[in-house]
Image (cartoon, rainbow, N blue to C red; front, side):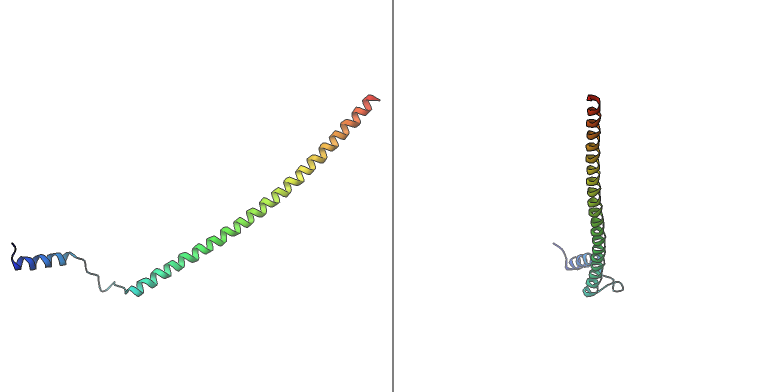
Length: 99
């Protein structure tokens, strides 16, 4: 069994240990939300900027890919043309040997 004085002391002791918000640094919830929203807006703008940069890089890479494919097609055509020329030259050489 406890005395009323002890109970009063105990309640004060517990309440004294609970940190109280400082009035100097305290913000209203509205102010705090404005700060959070402005930080979110900054993050959103940064995300959109990075996203735009990545989209431009993707377009550049796709264009390079297309150009490389065109270069590859041109190289294949040149190889095919050279092989035909080589085969023709070999046929001509063989026909000269037979005669």
